Image (cartoon, rainbow, N blue to C red; front, top):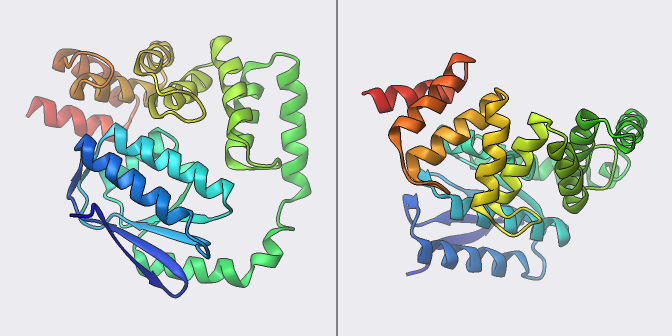
Amino acid sequence: MAATLSETRNGVLVVRFVDVELSDEFRIREIGAELVEMAIQPGVRQLLLNFEGVSFMSSAMLGQLATLSKRCLTHHISLKLCSVAETIREVLRIVRLDTLAEILADEDEAMKVFRRERRHKDADSDSESGTELDIADTYRTSAAQGDAEAQYKLARCYENGCGVEQDFTEALKWYEKSARQGNANGQHALATCYAYGMEVAQNYDEAIKWYRKAAEQGHADAEYAMGMNYAYGIGVKADLAQAEKWYRKAAAQGHSKAQEALEQILG
């Protein structure tokens, strides 16, 4: 049985998922292959992934989404997600996949956004503002001088296409420079790249190393990521005591998802 169902609606290729939990490795490889095949079909310019009914998504599936988003970028395909469960949406935010594809509330809202995109396609090419260019240039100057925070912010510009052409390879380069200078934001971003194979071979050992470095500096998202890694045995041996430890640290900083995860562990 196919892992996805698809239809074209008002010029948009809409993909829905058969399974409630996207966790089986064989099925995820099947989903990845199906998504890639759809993304290279002639005439596909707008692609919507509808996650209605999906309650869980493994790290392998997140990796497939990262791969798809880069393929869509290469082929100039507008990719959006909709009907994403709040728990999954938070994970997408933490691993920065929400910067690669817009997430909408439901399919109807997504279709409206796609329509607006089509109407304003010609104007979009001129939408980059002088202010964004100036900001990116400022970051580039400071980054070249070794400013770790500027290196992180320049990487963000490249990741999001803010003031520069979107370039994930350049983003990775500047994240790594920032991380190696001890910048917690850069370390968290680099960890995410390794965790989900974003412009680098997927490597959980490296991901854990950089998540830990950022978490040890008090980076709340990294602390939460460490909690999740220990809770689910991602890159480390599952250890609820360690999960609780890191969730507590993030929760103490007001991290809402860490607070929820801590409540689940403690019952």
